[in-house]
Length: 139
View 1 (tube, rainbow, N blue to C red):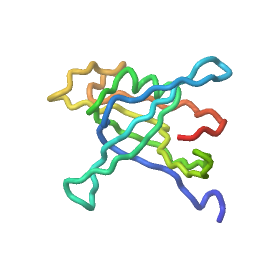
View 2: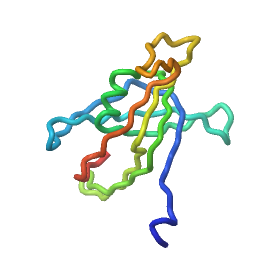
View 3: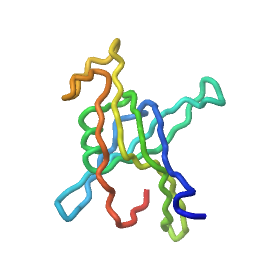
View 4: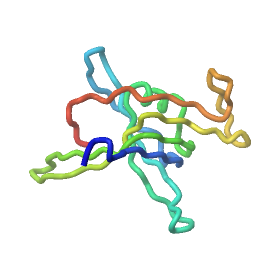
């Protein structure tokens, strides 16, 4: 299998189950931010049920979500699936998380009173993610 034979790309639209959790980390340029959050996404195979997807956004996207989103916000998420191995209480563990490349906050013009973005578009706000740090960190 060659590199061009695979694709790791994910698009989701869902609602935040709670406010994003923000953590900071050290970078060569100073402090960075990581936003961790869960999206409730409709399950297309089981009507009326939802899947709960754990997601992360780094850098400017984390700051963006911290500023513009809250519990219940509708989020458009674009990114990739990331897995890592780590040790927890002496056991080898494997974690899977969705890492964003871009996030949008989608506003319902009938019920949300959030302000419009700088482009004048009053239906969404968006931000592209910064690169995540290279050091391995457990989820």
